[in-house]
Image (tube, rainbow, N blue to C red; front, side, top):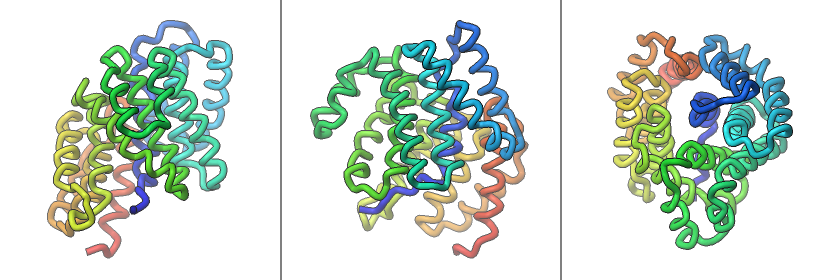
Length: 284
């Protein structure tokens, strides 16, 4: 079984997902968390975000300690810890510890209302899956956070076959998310599924054509403004099938685009950096 490589993708998906599910923030502390998150997402200098993220993590920890059952804060904490662990920390031990905290916050956000999900997450897939199918639209944001945080935790623990064995459960959760809302988080759930289906070539059991459909949907649901979707389409699908014309077209479209987009500017800036790197290497 090939170890999944989310190392380039997860940081940017998670950072850009911080605000999902937080549109109903009400208290002053939650509004402050919302404002800081938006400022991060709209930042075009990634180094500022790298330098400022630890302070925000501590701030969120304090807010959650004061309101341990506040769903919006738990979701924000899970997503930022996940992004920081996946993209900004090199030490493997720290990545594991931080991703575990992210997953813990996500579990609390979902399982306060859906306790059966967490009670069965270590059970075999067939026993776990029905409880995911029972989750409805009211818990969509928490369910999505639960899936992405779990994916980040698996990446941090990719030296463990036991952790990798959970990938079908994460895929099933994301499928449920897209069933409830196909364009959730401007197509980011579709993007995760695209990556999952393009880990292996067809000869080894992969389903790249299924992944291609998810990538195309991710682009459609963001109206082409999520540049990371095109980068991952090129990296995961076009390279897997040695389709250089598609690869180069997608990456050049990324470079020609304006990266400034509400709540996607940071991700788009990073996508353009990666597009340049991918075009410059000698893959084909």
